[in-house]
Length: 457
Image 1 (cartoon, rainbow, N blue to C red):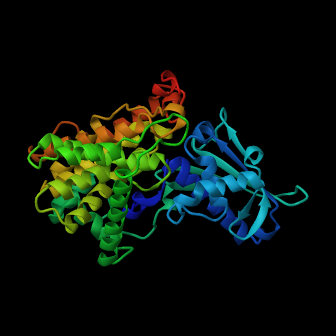
Image 2 (tube, rainbow, N blue to C red):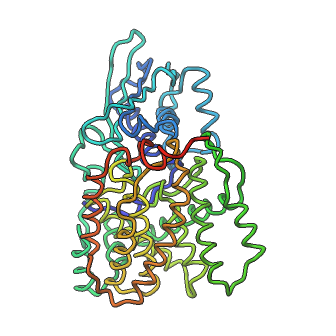
Image 3 (tube, helix red, strand yellow):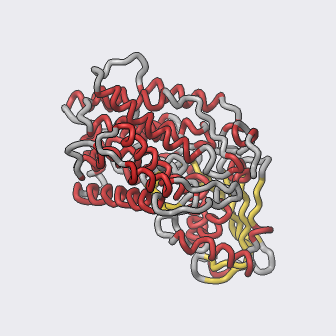
C-alpha cells in the first residue's frame, strides 16, 4: 500500500476530516452509485443513518451538514464554505434537497438523518448508511460507508482492504516501516523526501508534484491569514472566542526580531489561527486530519519565516518528508481520533512536522526518524475528548502545543547523532496498542475526559 502526499494532504472544510470531509465524500459517492445504476431520476427520498462516533458527535462535528451537502453533489475540495450554512438552512426549511444537483427529493433533516448514539457498525466506529426510496416508499438501494480518518472513505465492498482507496500503481521504492525506509535511504544515499518524490513520479511529473505541493502550502497560508484577521465567536454554543486576531495585533506591536520567545509565540499563533478556522467550518488542509490541521502549517511557516535560507524547494521537501512519516502511521496504526484517540491525530501530525523540519534543517535520515519518534512518543495516550462534541476545546490549543513539541523534537534530533533506544516503528506500534486499550469514551465520543468534566456554557 503506497500513500501519496495528495492522499494525506487534502483541501477541504472544517471542522473534521473524518466527521465532516469523509461523510460528505460518502454522500457524494452514494449519489454516484445511484447515477451509475440508472436510479437517480427515480429517487424520491433518502434516509441517512449515522452510527458510532458519527452518531454521538454528528451535530457538533458538522456531520449532518456534510452529508446534506454531499447528497447535493458537493465534495470537500470543491465546496464554497461561505454558502454552506445558508444552503443547509434552506434544506431544513424546505424539507427537500437537490439530489446530485439534478432534481429535488424529499428529505427532512430532522426525520431522515438519524443519529444512532448507542449503535455502531462492525467494521469501524465512523459508519454510515445511505438508503434511497421511490415515491411509493419502495426501497431502491442502500450502501454503507466508513470514514476511517483523514478524509479516507471505504464502502462496504472495501472492508478490510484499505488499499482499495489508494493508488494501485507500483512505485519505485515501496516501504511499509521506518526501518525499510531507512534501508532505502542508506542504500541509495537519499533523504526521506527523495524517496517519496521518486514514488510520486509513478503518478505525476515532478513539475506536477511540485506545483501541487506548493498549492497545498498556499491554501495553508491562506488559512493562517484568515485565522489571524478574523475575530468573533466560534459556532456551536460553547461561546469560544477566537483569539488569533487579537494575538496577532499584540505580537505586531511588540515584535522584536531578536526575541526568540517571540518567535515561539508566532508559531503558537499560526496553529491557533488554522484551528480556529477549522472550528468555524472554513477551508483547511487535512494534515493529516482536520483536528490536527494546525501543526504542520505552523511548523512549516516557522521554517519559512524564521529559518535562514528557507525557500520553495524546502517547502516541497518538508511536505514530502512529512508524507513519508504520515504514511507509516496510516499503514501501521491509525490517524483517526475515533479509533485511537487524539494520539492518532495530534500525535501523528507532531511526528510528521518534527521529522519534516529535521530534514529541512539538514538532518540525516536517522535524525529525521529520531525527530518523528520524539514527536509521537510524547503524545502517546493522548485522548480525544472534545467538549460538547465540538472541535474547539481542547483541540485548538492542543495544536499549538503540538507545534511547539514538533519544533523541540526536530531541534533535539538534529543536534544528536540519530542513535536512540526507541525506534519510530516501535513508537507507532505502541500508539496502536495504546489506542486498542483505550476506553471508547476517550475516542471522539464526547463522553469522557474534558468532555465529561467541563460544564458546557
